[in-house]
Length: 257
Image (tube, rainbow, N blue to C red; front, side, top):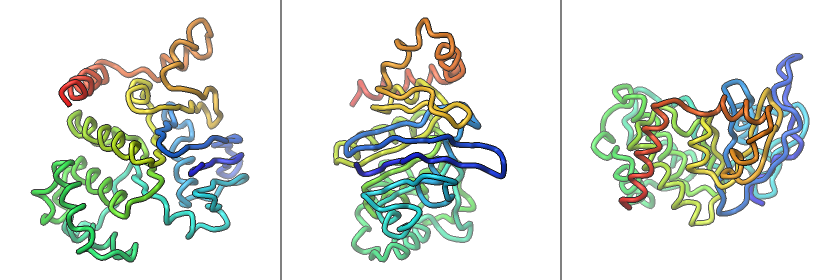
């Protein structure tokens, strides 16, 4: 297993945010953490990349403890947070150059890959602009490229639809499918059941920091029928009309490809 959550608990002062979270993400697999806002998804992802320490338990990346061997664990990870964190005075290209420098990689060796990724995400024409002028969606795309250019084995993406329009979401879905085919381990989070159903192989549903269901994503609705607690969760996680429009777009793009 490339990514393993092993009995992770998290408290903020006296407030319990995660309770005994255990699951794994295998090679060539997309797993979603699904739950309403405040369910503990972002906390779990931040722990997995070493931005927060668990109160108890650990996360292992390629066998390395994120608590005890953070440098060894982090070298395998590409992380896209929900909020884009950039340097406003750098151009998009300069930001990517900085990321590569931090990884000890030469821009010349990765130039073709940068151009390919920016073309895929429709950002090529904006690489020479400073990121202060970027829209929220452009910033998100640049963060995705920055998380992928060092070729990580484990890809972690918080709130996959954040700040992206339907076209960009469809592109990201295709990109993740391609990375999955290349045997990458992918962990995403979302608060929308339909998005998890469209993208993920396996889903862990969190509610108030506790796992309430885990299994193959496509089976949740069927298993929720007739079970009041799960039916309620299903309703909480089902999106509105705008999500239906997005799903129609995703299906159309899949049929076109």
